[in-house]
Length: 338
Image (cartoon, rainbow, N blue to C red; front, side):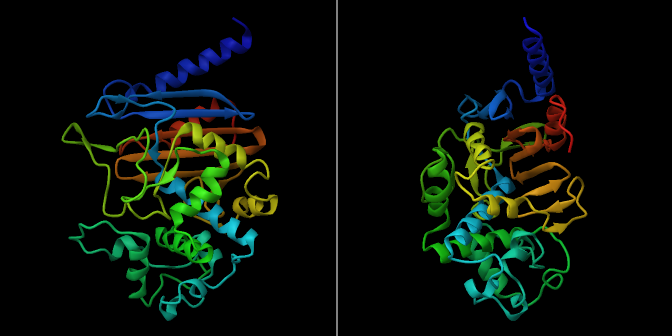
């Protein structure tokens, strides 16, 4: 065995050890390390569907939750390249039914979480049973003539903002959001199994179902009342498709250099741990570009170290643990430094 092969085997064994709690007849996880554009590690653990006995694989599609936000932001940037909108458009140009409190909000504020919009989750009735959609978020906010703070004056992570961005994409493009993503991002990049899941849309292929540990047992907790909101977290994807997405972030095959620079530019400072700044759909910490995603039954993270051409993805279909620290440890095996 060569020195290189020995090092790779050691890394593989180390990651396998760290993933032991995901192994066996339990909700699983999929791990990908991309180095210089090629998979340096690609492995899945545990089960995608406990009830059906289906094991997780690199083709398993997990609900990305807030990792979806980078695709929503990219959609806006594509439309800006088309000349259909600008990131400094007033939000009410596209969504005029919003109350006067929204007058000062621009699309830039939504992209960078500086809008001050009220969190739609806090506006839902306690007995809400019917699933909420992006259009429902707009209806909830139409009744709220108030903000947390003046637009642009502060940072507050906002699912409301990204739900509204999905509606802006629809109005500026003339397509529903899921169809826009398919036509302009997933299709062109060959992300054949990736989609924004709609009840009346295509079924998710090779789907992972979400689970939570309740009273010591894994129970399926796949959907919540907010799972149908697409702009803030409704995309399903796999390791293999996310590798295609990552590759596109290094060149002009999808977004121009100027658009990519906007996505990864520090738009606003934050006080979140390991997030010095937020860009457009990306958390930024030194040389690391990343985002996590948490939804009922799913915990995910994607870390990029572009200076080292290194990316780490961990997708899991369970409510705990949050895999950010694990992904950082994996990145450390390749000497990644944020």
